[in-house]
Length: 336
Image 1 (cartoon, rainbow, N blue to C red):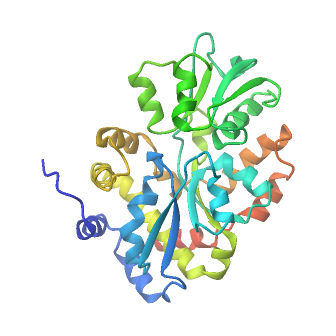
Image 2 (image 1 turned 90 degrees about the vertical axis):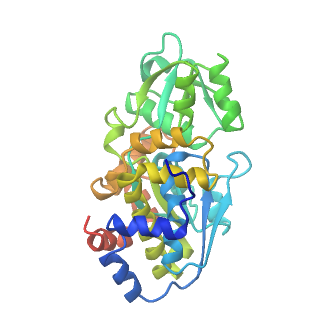
Image 3 (image 1 turned 180 degrees about the horizontal axis):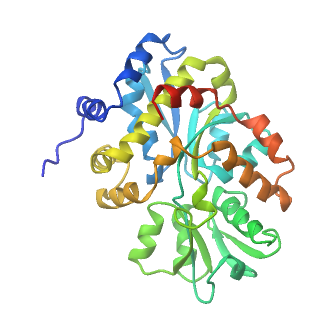
């Protein structure tokens, strides 16, 4: 098997062969150049946001001469704070986490949904469902972190109050948080790739919710693209071009997961190419063409508003924090 690096030329050739740089490439060349030739995205260790990394060479093809990945360690900063502080321009993250960020008036705007569920809620002992979490210890990185918001929305959906019905244990880093669960100090843990694969290899606990399979979670986007509001407003051409590159990269995950996994490994974004391939095959990247991103945010905003975790109504969240113009144009252009 040829293990040679998938270089820039090979990557773009593969994308073209998959039909991703055809008509849309001509349209891109006919557009004005981006207002800025620098684009900064948040670097997060989750494999499921592979399109953000696969898009690197496609972004260069869209006219960005400088593509940066700003480190996010999950402890000292919030990924959306990187946007608010003007250290990053775009970010892919879980839909439930976007809702409190918008509610707290962070200057972000959601641009598109990328893929379906990738999170899995693991539990131990007699915990067989969400309602069994009442009074149980749940491992999270920090209070208010994305995984706590996701679990809270699940609890709210079944009529529980996440502020009262669970004991939240902070691990302060992703490895330490998972260790709380593995070591038996916590009863439940919400993992994202590659954590579920690691937990299964260790035979640690059992899955009570798989967001890629279990309804209603499987009906909504998991990860979505958000941008810094002032970047989107002042750089509409750059925003559209950047989003187009990410959506094309999403299609590569669908059509060529093997080569996508190899690219991630070659670039050092993953340590285990086999695990990356497993994730890319398991996660559904097709929903960007069919799911309603507005319905996703409305669903999670309603759950969190019901239990008092956000003050804004779902409609206010949508009015304040979304902009679907670029997505709607690109759906037509890419013949979604």
